[in-house]
Image 1 (cartoon, one colour):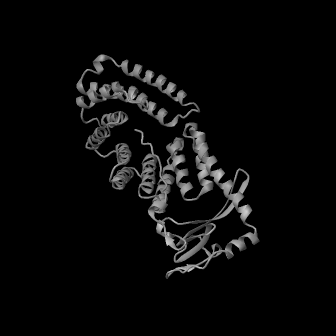
Image 2: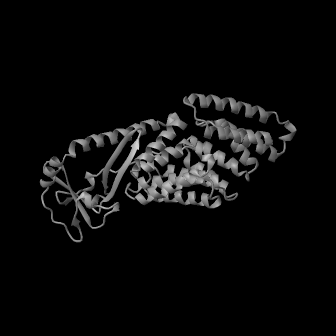
Amino acid sequence: MAKATEAANNLYVLRDTYFPPNPQDKLTKLRMESDAALKLLDSIPPDQRKLPLQRATYEYLRGKILDVFPDYRKEAEDHLSKAVKLNPSLADAWLCLGNCIWKKGDLLSAKNCFNLALSKGPNKEILCQLSMLVRKLAQGSENQAEMVEESIKHAKEAIALDVKDGNSWYNLGNACLTSFFVTGAWDHGKLLQSLKAYQNAEKDERMKSNPDLYFNCATVNKYLENYERALSGFEAAALKDPGLNASDEVQKIVNLLDKLDNFLKVHKKAKRLASMASSLTSVSLSPPYRRANVDALTEGLNKAVAVVGKIKEGDQLILLDPIYRFADFSWRGKSYQFKSIRVDFLNQLLLNGKPLSPSQAVRASIHAQHKP
């Protein structure tokens, strides 16, 4: 039984670390290895899987091996259900059953399985899966933000059990990133928490084979305007798993940077800038705000400062308490250098001296896939 257990565990390592250019090759490899694991399991003499506890382990391993594929398999659920009936104390069997049921869309039953697994004792892997499932349940719910906070709580509980476990840190990073978007995509503190969690995950050598870690960390860096790190992260993700389409993300950022670079070349002429600046009308600012030009801004948050700009003929835009950043980096032999000004709240924007309405703002969003 020990060899069959090792074969089942190795099967999941293959699932989580093997990302060939053609995804079909991965399925073929999984089928081949799962067939070998099932043969090894069936080679166990009948008299060694006769007793209830022995039979429970056999059913559990058979169900676990069958459930390694991305799609739901009823046969896997049947074997795992038999296992927990024969031995309700098998925590990993409850975990596998929850993952299997999740695949068929019965999320509440899956959550019940995870909670039953946790009732056998604290377990970081189960807590991570529960954290993911809660985020999945949160999608489209009325109390989405509260449920994501519950997800973060479970993620932190997993870390408390093993502070060096990279997967637990990765899961916390995902939970904080989700929280950033569901709360309006304005709190960069959540992005920094997410980035810190991903950086802790990267310290675990086992996580270096996880392309999603690189992709998600690059996503955070993109929103934090760390463009060079974002490009490096997306490129690393593309090399590890071509199926992630991370190369498209690299191209999107490069296109944006090139567009910005070309725009600055056109508009940086002194006479043109002087003409545009002189066309800005005076504005009355409420205390404590004072008007400042871009050159007077300091790196980071500029409290009680207002920057006035023009977006089209006749319209002026005022940015209150802007966050300033000077970007200076190179990518693939091309240098980029520009000044960035950002505000995070709608009430920090004034159009022609008047506040904008919520209908005039578009929040950033993310489409997250939570796969068991």
